Image (cartoon, rainbow, N blue to C red):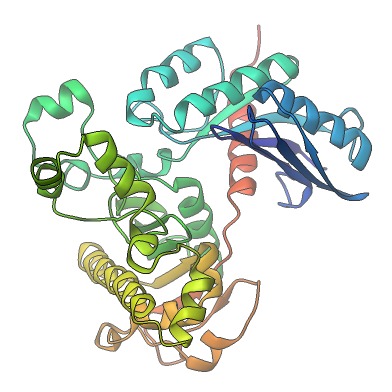
Length: 400
């Protein structure tokens, strides 16, 4: 029997949604409303009766979700004709307060609001999405699924920064990690592919945002993103790791305020800062044409990944598999090969033919002689959110 969940991902000026069967992972419909609050917005909806694209003015997230409901009625499936059991919300930052998917109520909304200083670009929009959905679907349970929750199993030595203790106790300065729903989904799929539940993995989520996670027996024990998604690997527009004194240097030398430096490191750095663009496909085309900036950006990107693979190999002690996922990880064989080149002494051997073969299915790309499997597994964060949503509502105490 199907258990459909409406999965909502509310951004500052966008609203993505997907109607997912929590049992099978099939998406019956999906869509996105963009440029909310601007003079001209757009809405794309794909359902069983086809896909529609429209240009319209969307003043608020409530109007965006109302447009989605109307699209379900026109393009299908009609929400009042299926077994819609809940609404699941992606919430970026749960701090140290949320380690599990949690039913949305006034108390949860208040706690997520308290965490806004840790995610000022994301949590306000996530809050808006939850409030709007509660108004439009008052009869359905709503569940918040946090990007940070999977990483709440990090041990203290992995999440603690070497800063004055009161920074952590009074201001929440610690490592939280992100992309948790993706890492959780891919880790489970990797364990199933390997036929074991207790496996050690290094999971590489490589998209426009990138993160690496060391997973021991299904539990995150270290991850590259920190208090914010800026730390760690080189990304599309984010710098990843850098000397923290660079902030002070730029402030002294150029007179830049902290907000300008923060914006540059989040939106003008990474591949965009090195090569001029953050689209990895464009990077590949420019490399092939002999662009030295593109080649350097590629080399920096892959070298940083290789360093994290080595570090997490050491942290885990033994590794059963390296797992690639997300847009670049799933689709760019050159990046996969370069990121693991030279690690053969660690038992990591990529088969060039398997790596080059195009597929949208989970697959192994390591040689038969490789002690460490190398896997490519498409991520499915919407399905993970749907599954965790159903799990949360089934485990809630019965009403008396």
